[in-house]
Length: 300
Image 1 (cartoon, one colour):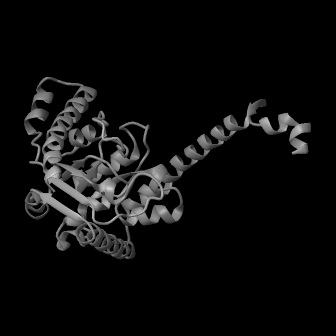
Image 2 (image 1 turned 120 degrees about the vertical axis):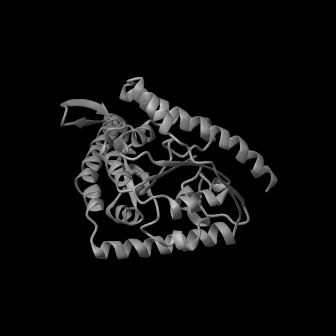
Image 3 (image 1 turned 60 degrees about the vertical axis):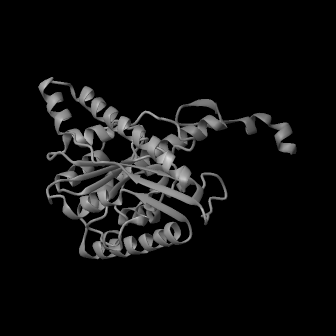
């Protein structure tokens, strides 16, 4: 207390040697946070995605164990300890079982809880849920899921790809997703770009537009709307799982982009115009599905 009274400026200000000026402690903290974020961005590009590109046999075994553990836990929580009702499950089942090997799959859904993924997939059949090769790749916020080495390895083994929010559509994570679409894999995207805690009708991010536009083979796109996941894992402290909650999941009809892509090409649309048109179309479909799902959820 005495030192604070004698040297009030010591508490309020510190010297930023890098810039040679006096700045507030909060401002300096923000600068160092920004430095930390830049280092994290460079770090993830340096080793995480390259490692995802070149998995070893041991890595694949560890990944299979991760999928089994998380999948079984999610299924017990969603199907046994809570009340979940799934509509049109045959759509995703057919996509996983019957689509040609060279045709990629993209699923898009709303984002209400940090447990949306893996919670959404808890209702899949075990033959899909426990099959690492069949399961999705998912874009995950690098500043939440990849905050240290151990978290990074866990999410990497779960086929999560670190996306840097605010870095636009041309970043390593999107490039990696396009590579996986080229191989006919399944990519899941939360196009809202963050947990939509207030369930607003947010403008979707254009990254999903780039994925569909630049995929060598037009992907099968399935919209998903779910309600109640934020009751199973609330977005407020103490962040504990709940039981006996209602969860509704509704798979929409696959969206055929063949005609839209053809029209955009004939109109010689720019990449920006094309990405916007594709994203807007997905937004319209998700809004329609949301209205239908809300009515179904009320009956549960």
